[in-house]
Image (cartoon, rainbow, N blue to C red; front, side, top):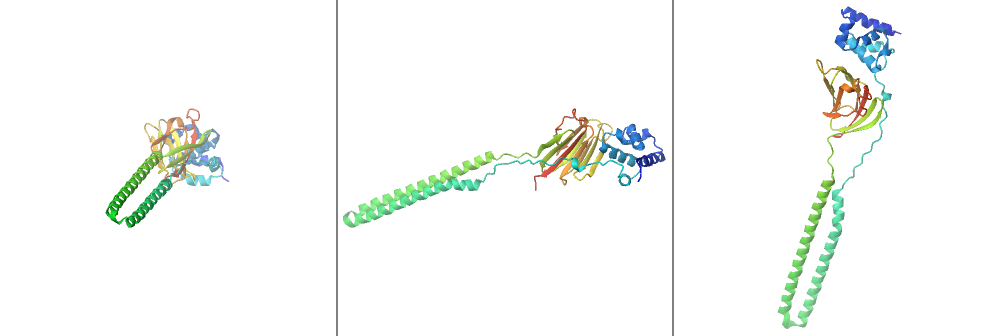
Amino acid sequence: MLSLTELGNRLKEARLAKGMSLDDLQTVTKIQKRYLVGIEEGNYSIMPGSFYVRAFIKQYAEAVNIEPEELFEQYKQEIPSTYNKEEIPEKLSRVQTRKDISGSSSKIFEILPKIIISLFIIGALVLIYYLLQQNAGDEAQDNPVDNNENEQVEYKESDNLADKEDEEETNETTDSETEQTTEEEEATEQEPELPAQQVNVVQSQGKETTFELKADQFVVKLVSTGETWVNMLNGKGYSFFQGMLVKDGQESEKVVDFSKETEAVLVIGNSTNTEIYINDVKLDYAVPPADQVRQDITIRFIPTNE
């Protein structure tokens, strides 16, 4: 089994072969000289954490033209793991309920009693009309001389009944349309407009915070306001970017599209100098940066366009 000293010696020999001093390497990698010495000596106890050990070794290897993945595979028993999946807290159940409004069903049940009443009134009027006609016919048979007068009365009564039925039907239709319009307006007023995205804190403990994002897309942008080291990974531990962000003189921001991922893990080495944006909306730290400088942020993505 290879030792950590052999790993340090291999890196050191590669550095010397390129004619680079520790100061030169510090300038290239932006890693403090004492950490570079710790890597060569196998003294990882001075590192801020296991994330930094692997990140610094990777940057050291790339600076001296050694393939990092080959190096990690060869010394995988000695190099600390970058990312432990078990450290992520289990997803907490968050149930958000919203009252469903079934407009068509409620309207039918509200209008149905009125329709029944209208049919009952129409049936009663028809019955009255029929009885009046029967009565008029009997009177005509009993009084043939007054036939013309009875016919005139029947005609007027028939016209009055028809006009009354038309007026009641018109009123019922108007009332029904008015009530339907009012109900639609109320339903429209009650239907809240959903925000473009929702970001909620699921759990926060120490330097670790878990958020839940509901949105159409998931684009993360890290912006430095000073010197900071960051690592941007997916839920499977694959790193899209890791390294230093510096406001002046070098790359000051990094954007990664996580829309095809279920979650993103952001390791922020200096949260006081790092701003996080989700779909161009600034994310507030659940733990104030002044209280916890190093923070590990997990964001779980729930697409709303599926």
